[in-house]
Image 1 (cartoon, rainbow, N blue to C red):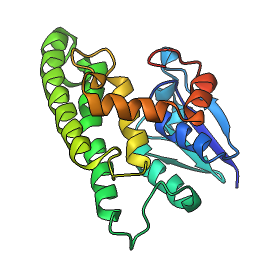
Image 2 (image 1 turned 45 degrees about the vertical axis):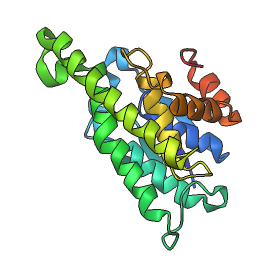
Image 3 (image 1 turned 90 degrees about the vertical axis):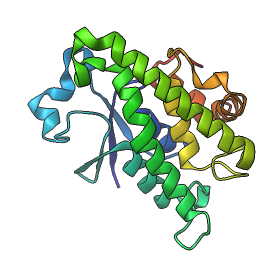
Image 4 (image 1 turned 135 degrees about the vertical axis):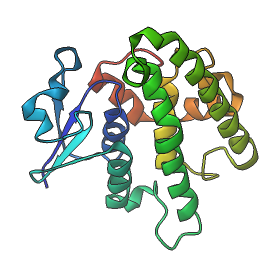
Length: 211
C-alpha cells in the first residue's frame, strides 16, 4: 500500500501526520503551500474539492476529513490500542469524543484563525471575542471531564481523541484563554507532547511554537 499525505504545517493535517508517525507507517509527504493558495488550485481541488488539508491518497485514491482519516488509521493499526473495538464498552465514548471535537471545538477554532470567512474582515474583532468566550467554555467542560474521568478522555489510556484534542489545544495557544490555563488539560498536553512521535512531527513539519 502506498500512502501520500498532502499537508500544511500545523494545520488539520497535523492530527493525521502525528498518527502516521505514531504507527511508524511508511508514507510520503506533499506540502500544500497556503501562501500561494495551492489548496485552491485546480490540481489540488481535483483531489480534495473542499480545498483544505489533509488529503490522504492511499493506493491512488484520495480521501479527506481529518477526523475520519484519524479513525481509519487507528482501526488499521489495532495493535496500538488507540481506538476501542466495536464491541468494547468504551466504543461509544470514543465516537462521542471524536464527533464532539469535530463538531463543537474545531469549527470554533477555524473561525478564530479565519474570522473573515464567517463574518467578513470588518468584523474580525467581534468574531474573536465571541469565539474566545465559547472556546474557553469548552476548555472548562473538558477539564472538568478529565478531573472526574481522566487522566485521558477515555480514562486510563490515551486514544485518538487525545491526539485530536492536543492539536486543537495547539491551535488555541494564542487565544485569550489557552487550554493550558486549565490544570488537567495542561497535564494532558504535557503527557502527549512527551511522546516520541510528537518530536518527530515537529521536526518533520518545521514547527517550533508550543513545543
